Image 1 (cartoon, rainbow, N blue to C red):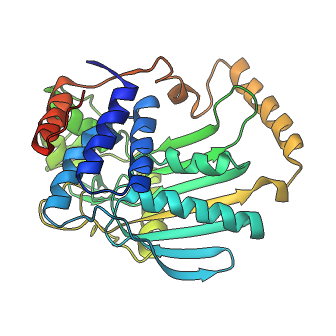
Image 2: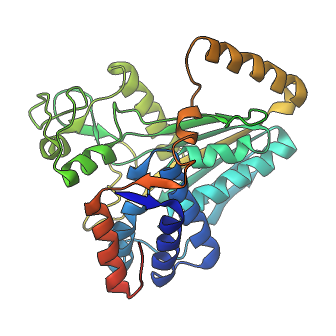
Image 3: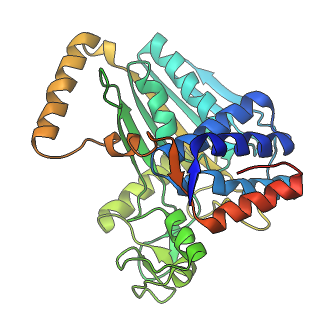
Length: 334
């Protein structure tokens, strides 16, 4: 069903406030949720609020995100999220990386003991707005099959954002290491829909169009062993190096009994250390023009157009789950 973006924003704020999330943190989380819906990534949006509510109620996630500094040395910072909101920790981590890049030309900040941060492109774009290259990576719970049907590595997203000039959106590559986000499989199950072949396998390693069997089995990596290799690299960098879980030990955001303990790594690179920013923008204009003349769009261009009309599409089941949560919290939404 069609829902106003502003209604998603209002619902998110009301629910998060009732969950005990501080105002400043609430603004960050809601902005990330709205960004997901505006950029065609509804699986990372408001539908996750019931999961946050359950985890907070059961003591598996904290409503207040305390970012503890573990290390601060020149261009590198290490943070511990203390099982708070991944969105809040990652937002602050990228801003720390930007501050470091302004001073040293590059900034690298890791986050451990965190939860899923939503859409990777939401954070990389923060650096692009400062005329920097922004990179965001994260590891996640086992979802990708390496051989057969057993999942070992997460979908482990990566986003790289670069600034553009004028009315164009920023260049923003945002992708998982699987052929599709696992959230799309969950959404298909929720809507009673089949999934295309080639996205996932069942527990026996056989191709399946059944989302339930796919969730019991595993997603397939992009490009076969190449995507699996990239997922390994991200697991090591965002997980092992940050001090988070890795090697298949991260837990799903919606795990019934355990904390997630996933890790993130954020990087900002000051473009002015390579060339004058005006020269860079002219070169990017040239590059984008070449892409457009080839009849293509650059990463981030299509997504930026998704929510420009002020509406987005959400399944009725998802809306019902949000309304049910709101009723339990005694607030009116949607």
